[in-house]
Length: 163
Length: 204
Image (cartoon, rainbow over all chains, first blue to last red; front, side, top):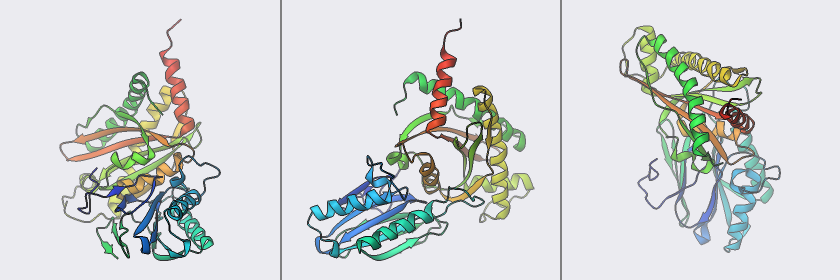
């Protein structure tokens, strides 16, 4: 698939369950029930992004980015290693949609994903700078860690927001 | 999960039988010939999913596999928006193609999915010698990848790759295009391998 959908060729697109910390632009394409958790350290122009699939790891550790709890730990650990302090980190949470109509079953995991990610952020005392979760719509996320950070969310209905 | 060429062939044949039945029912419904591709079987790492599933706005009708294999995974019919509108028009005898998706389209998509997937599961279950039934359908009209994530989240909680069967169905008149995907969970995947091994044993 095209992965320079915002005309940005240096972008790193993170697939399901992947995470990354760095200074380069990062993004995820087609977020449904999954969550893009972005932690940002303005002072260091450093950010971490995780494409989280499920809320709890239940002891599975081989793919930390896949679960909310392990992703949070892994991102923080890596950022602290690179010199960030918890107090200088802010968060952006995007995704967690409930994609399916006529479905009462477990397909709509999005809400739970979003709730757990926010709980974990609160536990860590990390402020949420921006949040766009829930709803019934797919989203693509793009983030530039430089300075204050720049965020673009592109929704399935064609609307876009830039911060 | 690495598939050897032998497993790949056998699984493709398995998908082929299901998809052929689904194509036949669609063809009868539309009263026009339907072309289908040879099914592709891929073991995809979840991190790689976005390289296989597009981000095009599609109607995705999703069924959980029930029956003897409880929660056996999911089967999905995916159609681009234009196809859904074409199919509704075909069934209702209307011609307007330049419009938004409405409730009628949603019902049509679900109904078509229902009929195709019932045929798909009937045929494949017979081959396996088990009963597989579709759950009631769920529908999403959105970025295909976004809808797929929710399904993958259900089958890949404990594993990092998913087995995907993909067949494309096309018709010239009306111009429609769709794909059938099957995502068996880990348990059903094992069962598929066992069955295929048995089928390949020499007759004695």
